[in-house]
Image (cartoon, rainbow, N blue to C red; front, side):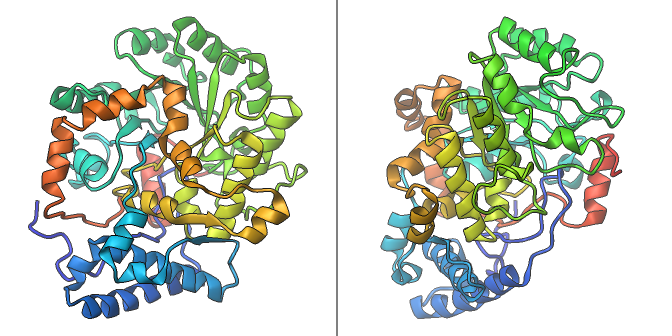
Length: 463
């Protein structure tokens, strides 16, 4: 590892760029986000000089993160986006103690959507590997636990095999025995062999949940969760095996092909049919090309379709449907007003106990910037009064960060944190943070060309 990834301090600690998680076409930054980055760079130089430190030292400090978020506020205010914002005093950009108190946080952070790409994926570029994964997730961020998930692929073109996922989990477990990493079992029930694999995934690999992509299929055609030969068979087998957490990619459509299967229309139907199964809706149905405003039950897409499906099928708030924020929160950080509508709607309609933090990293590098952004995020009083959104209080923020997910996965938070305080990961983290060396890079595709290459590598098509 190089002595310093960014010796001149040119990279911002809060990363706004076009990076995708490989499941949606990269979206270029709009003029407001470009202005946000320019302001953040300018203010970083000014504030570093005022504190008498180098740019690199400033960027890796809590003041660097606070300065960046405050610059984002300024850019969004110019654009009239004031419905959501990063709630920081201006002095946080120059006062390390105030910045650390606001952005350091002490919540239990349980990331329910993480990714590690093995030798057939990012490893070929030198960015993969368990050591780098551990550094990004557990040293450079405040993540306490993570669920390692999968991306859709043909069986012969998996970016991460269950064996590689289990090896990474074993590395962390052997270091501590504290179970910091859980793993999913990938099930595409419309792909021959996947339903049959569920027995081995549960009994041999001890998966904690299932992951499926309703829009994906080896022939380009997806499925609905209520389809008898695919979705229902998967749910019924999950119940029989006693692993009753099912994570479903909804939103972030791959293309127009089988688009209807990317929508959340079927979630409420199966949630009502199977009240003893937890349905974790990854990305909450969010679609990057569509704005998110107040709830519109007639829209038929995006986050609104998830809410409509749940409510029209009589599934109560805080029941067995969970809204996950992986990639959705990261993308919405570009536009905090849109983020306010997304988070506000989900909290109001799905429930305060059923919104889950996920980062979708390592596609976006270390998730620390997403964590810091969420710690500072607030919905404006105007939007709260107008639409009935809740205030993001410390208690509610702690629920989103990890307490809600702990309940879903049967995690005893007090016991986990008690063991973690003395485990090797925590000792490495404390030692590392005496002289931190974050890279502030992202790894996912950033252009259309890179996205299509990624899609082709796992056997998908852009049509």
